[in-house]
Image 1: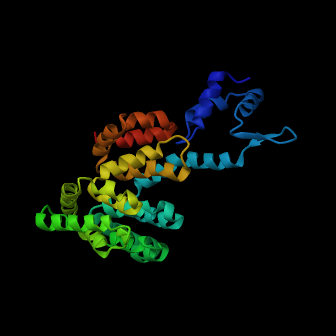
Image 2 (image 1 turned 90 degrees about the vertical axis):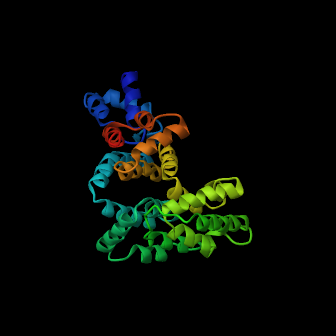
Image 3 (image 1 turned 30 degrees about the vertical axis):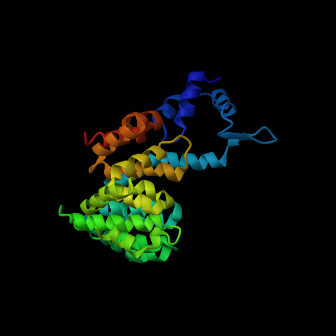
Length: 314
């Protein structure tokens, strides 16, 4: 019979967010048939038994394990890609998966520099013989389409100059659009889309400040009524806050496999840009260092690789 400590270690090795490869090698490699049987008996969540008392893997968990074994490989492949190719492929995958993944379109179009987003569009041309704009327009339906096409098409001014009077006026425009949401959705307002898709990030930061002065609330709080606009404002004005929330959701135990993928995506794409700020924001929001959360939640080579990446920025 397998030792209880080994059973516990092995169960944790299969628990998701990567696989503890060394535990599998050191324990499974020496087990006798009786020990493997006791493991199967002790894990009804992994194995099922039919009317003939035949023990077999649950097909659902085999599929989940396939994804977990691939997490390290996928992280390495994404990390070694040119950033433009990486973002282009992430956009393509998001469009294939549908509305539940459309937040990735916002994330990429709003947190990259003008030249980075232009590079992603060039890479998309080369990889898929289409433009991002035409594929977004084709795949996205409803009121989100106009916003998404405008965001992925953007080439924002990146200087520091801001006209405060214009920023204040546009903060008022957004405030009115949000207050009149019962008459028309803000995401369908051409002025809202124009402001969010064309203004520089310093200008949008000024709008964010003036909006708070006008309404007494932060604009992203007011936009809880519209997930896509809320994500857009957060990615443009407080990306570290946005990424911290995405990471915490991805690190939740037993979360959906597609949500878990955000852990790889965010750490790989932000490791060389603002990971230090994301770590600070994560600690502020959730009261635990990001490295500790990853250490406690993930497994094996995947865990080691993620911890190495987030340590790069200090």
